[in-house]
Length: 378
Image 1 (cartoon, rainbow, N blue to C red):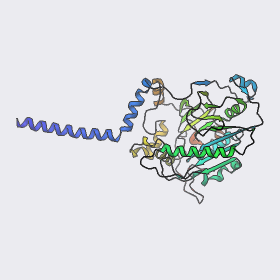
Image 2: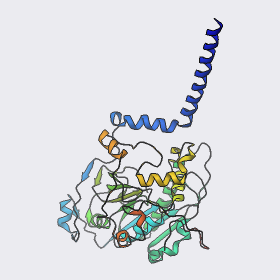
Image 3: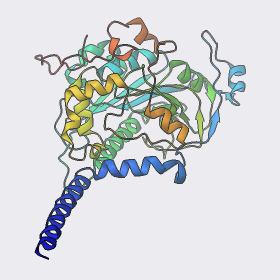
Image 4: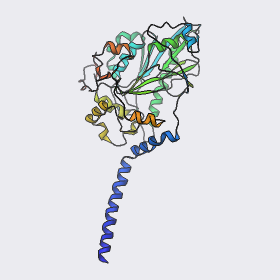
């Protein structure tokens, strides 16, 4: 009888210890567990967000965009060809390389660029003002750039990073309205609204500048991860172009049910140095994905993740069919650099980290008198 009681106590103690360990692990990894359960079953209960009316995109090198090309897309050519301005508006954190590629890609088809940055991340962590500190690098475009520094603020316990992000978008709306109000009243203004890593192709902007697509249209972009080596698919749609009106505002959500297919590139987490990855992971609006797992920020782990094309948070992809889920879990590296931004290919050695086979990231460069040079090479 005594022996049975002792065995029962041992079993109880062991079970109690295992229970404590189990609940501790669940508590520490609840975000990851929720992700696995959510993503693994998503094709059963969820449908993809975004516009459903996909416009076939016609383009070939040397194609002259005219009324016939507009008609191919189901549109008419604009009758205000001489009275149109195209503006490109972006928020920037550390992405100086992507900014340089963007400015060179769009310079010939965009009349003015608007850039907003902050001295804090969306989560309220202090950061350097990368554009302001390295503005000389972009002096060739300075006459076409309007820049604004929006001071960040530490988040209160009840505040979300999305509040700070939304604050920046409101500031961009005000900045655009102030500029557009000074234009002639007969001037039609088109505004590209996209994140810095969402880059419309120059020929796309030229097409939309020439053809009347309506009030707004989304841009389907080739979605890449870490560089142009890992293609996720044609899954990016939040970039858009709008005809500016009295009630237009700077946004990143769905504004139309129409999207132009294969309209550019979305290069997510395409940074030159490892510290930029840590800054992004801790500072963007979905920083809760770290969920206390500081091992995710280990430089060696980040480097290995980049070279393997795996998710940087160790999460399953948000796919809406099991075919997409399994294909995105095991990306195959590309061996082609065809169809990429011209400036990128023209400067392949400078931007080796963005091209197939260039997964090794550089050590951060030391600060200079004018500020940090993380990612700078100019």
